[in-house]
Length: 508
Image (cartoon, rainbow, N blue to C red):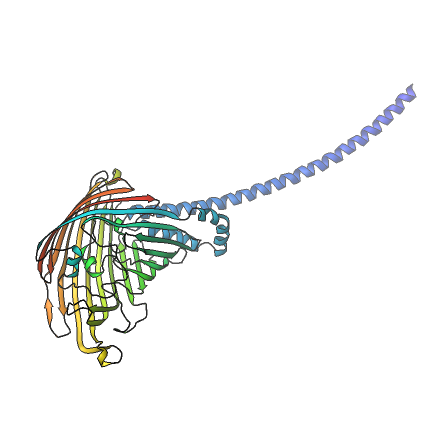
């Protein structure tokens, strides 16, 4: 029995020794694995911490940019908010490699394109009644056609129809608006105007979004960006009708042309925007083009325009913007000197305009425009220098200019208007304007003549139940100098406009 116990103890001791050695070996292996895992975890922690620091720095930079833009917009309300934001977007895009832009677009482009385009419909309708007293009775189109010194040519009218003002009920037009982002490099918008008589493309524009150094290029058909009124559509006006100086020198549509525009937002602490535009040159009044058998053919572009806009940094409630502008282009005219319905003499030369504009806005920060105030004005001066052409078929040969027989016209005008928020959604406005302060004409026969000026005063009251509708009442009193004498006119307007769908924000 004692012998068996010794054998058992020996075997147990041997097995215990083997187990202990195995356990110790296995324990050493486990500790090595644990240590290795700890090292890997620490590496991951270090890597995550480094990534977090980089991410925090990026977030901080982004927040600093957002704060800087916010301060700039709050401190400088005169700057065009849309232009500021577009400039910041353009600057941020230039900091990102194009490959990154393309990659990002491939991921989200389809989603963005699915939101395209913005769509809206604007209906602009009004009632007009006029009372004439003086030299003759007629329609306002006759008044504009026969104002002394501002007589219109009888050349091509390029099919413009829908801007006229008729007695009684009118549908100025139905405006269709389409806009959207194209890709990381372009955006586009188009505006079509449909009247009872015709339809036309008012604007069709492609704009760049990623040019460096504050530059932007746009091409297509658009309103020139000089001044204040010219770049606005009729539903953006504060009054039913446009100022006289625009109506008499550029027509119902203003300067609306096919061409290109290059603008530059300067990297200054204040808002400084400048632009150059090159157009085909087809304005029916100041830059008319005829060509053909009567006058020399001149290929486009035939019109060049330049402008500058400046806004200082004012306190939060105040905004101010001032501008300078000018343009020069080819002008050709046909006239019916015998008044028998047939054009009998033609003129060829160039037209020039220069001017200045300003706008001041006060934002009371009350609901729906209560207490808001806007004061704006523009001065516009034009000059035509045209040569009389000999186009008598019996003389043979191409049209030739008659040396020393030219016509020179110099006219100017201005308007100033103020609009005040009387109550929430209710505004009142007053506008004063004069044309012909300078009103001189030199004729091909060597004679010259000076004319007096004309004026008009207008008052309006409008109510906007929502941002999608507006009702306006307006009264105009004008004293116009016609070729036949003075003409006094009272006009009453009742206007209703509604907007359906989404529409981009209007500029400052």
